[in-house]
Amino acid sequence: MNTLIKQPLFWVATAAFLLIGMLAILYLMPPLLQTFQDNRSKLSTLDGQITSKQSYLDQINTLKKSSDTLTSLYASASQSLPTGAQNDLLSLQLEGLTKSLGLNLAITVPFNQASTPTVAPTTTTDTTGTVQAGGAANSTTSPTVTTTGSQTTFTLSGPADFNSLKTLLAALRSFGRWNKVTTIELSQGTGAMTATVTAQVFWKNNKIADFAGDSNLITKARAIFSSLKTYTTAPNAATEGAFGRGDPFAKP
Image 1 (tube, rainbow, N blue to C red):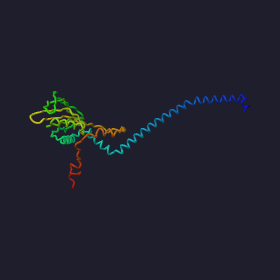
Image 2 (image 1 turned 90 degrees about the horizontal axis):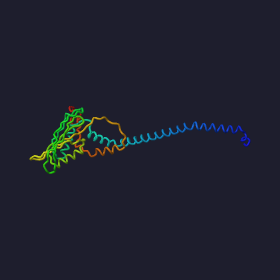
Image 3 (image 1 turned 180 degrees about the vertical axis):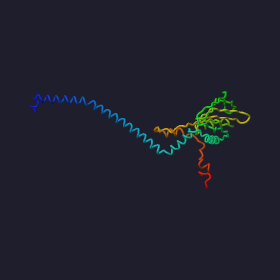
Image 4 (image 1 turned 90 degrees about the vertical axis):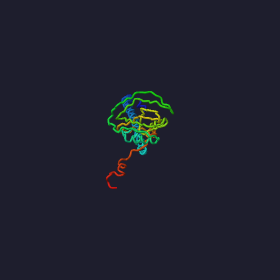
């Protein structure tokens, strides 16, 4: 070993080996480090995608297990903001609403609803007045807009005292069809007080949207639709209109 150390060629070879090794490390290390960092970044991205897909899958499984609840919530949502005017069903709903409150009100619903959004404004003269419980009331009229398309205007009119009117307005807030009261007219004659409430319901012909993956979908839908009251259900014309038969002329 001592003899080898004393040889100049040994030191030259050792120096050359170390130099080549250092050059190789300096040349190869940056690409290797960059590749390592890229792989770590890709792995982190894949982990995020896997977590997202797993969360999405968990939500889908939750919704699948709650299919009955989803069906019920979808029916409530479709009734609250339907894709068409559905004024025939609206008339039945309003009749059920007024009857449940013990009110005998005339219901006016336009059945000639246009299919394209058009607006035909009719503005009435503004008059100011005050309404007081238990006393006479001045007529209060606001500008009204009768629309066809995405909005349907309906009126409820007839004898109603002040407390009944307040109950009616509260019931409209939880009505199964989303609505906005636009005008309230009160008149006090020699007989009972007469009230006319004008309001609008809305509908939108929209397409079915893709599932957004909201994990609180059912909770939010319940919070929105659980308090709404429908007062009636749409009759099954395929059976009720034919006395339970699909073909009214078929032999029983």
